[in-house]
Image 1 (cartoon, helix red, strand yellow):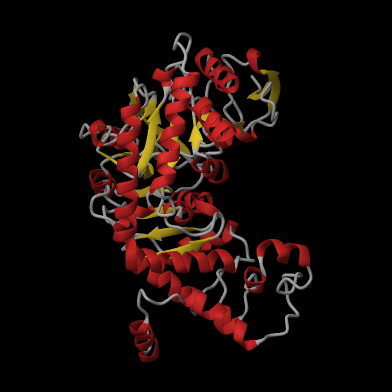
Image 2 (cartoon, helix red, strand yellow):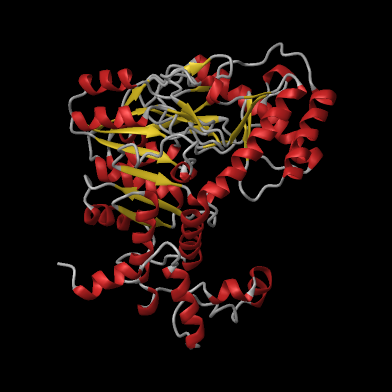
Length: 492
């Protein structure tokens, strides 16, 4: 039962409040003498670090204490901050996550499934999804997301394909959806949620790139508004908080207490108040000014898109891709640019922008470039990017002959990722692995979508892609051999 005092307290909370921030400010006025961790003691013990980050930052890099609450078992200011976040995002409950959206995604998977349970999902998921399956022993059931052959990118899941997978796998526990993909593609989350619930499944959403959907009506549907049961949000991407700070949202079909237990299996007991305060402050900003913030972002991206498409060869795509099925909607804040007509891979344009023009974009792959635009950007920044792209086209473009077209390669799953990851394995030169079952990951990072995952068959096509991506300069990660000259495969 909720007591009268707590009801009155909750009624006083409003989106103008920032409970964690306010508690930290009260702590500073208390002039506490710290005989606890961290050992830098408000920065006094590490002058070099204080000089770099500033005394204001170090003075609130503190440990959990009664006046500041505890993320492992929040009962006061953190609980209040999470309640305000849940209200702002339209969820039954919100959890502050200080291990990035990776930790939120893993919490969703570990909540929904155990060893041998099946999860229906597209293959173009972030590595954190498959990592979670390695931890819990769940088995993926992949729905082909389709591919735009011109752009070479994976699209979304069609509801009819999800329904077919559900009917073919009656023991599945959940459906997992990207909302949106790294490139801005959205599936019909509302229809997929309805299908999942009709068959007793949970709908889990990776909204690492979808925080802004909750605060603007001209953007695609936010997952929790569309009926999702859990959603993982990267507040530090479009939400404005510090890197590594995220949120996990849940609906009323999921036990808040159980999810909290799952989170505490892996999340640190020494939560950063810098990260939590940034979540609290950013939630307040979005709740009060979200529409205004994203009006500006949309305007900036539309301006950039128009200018880039005027250059020639580049193609900054948008809602013209929408087909009602595999592309149900498109995130118009995404500045995704197809570069192949210039004769340059996206990663080559990415490298030129950084090395020759001092412009850092989000990522480049073998055919596309993503420039991340936020409220922190200015029109003159857009103009500088456009001018640099124009010069790159004029000075570096070349013939397209020999360029690899496919980016998304449909996997051939032989066994579950946990089985493959922990199975007896052997290391082979990469060119001797064709026809073997991979027992580790290979991916370009970003975006962190595996080219190979544990349990998948290594094919000639995949090996050609890996060599091509390496030659073009993509940042390759995942294998035990960091030079990616060898791969671990399951013993036969």
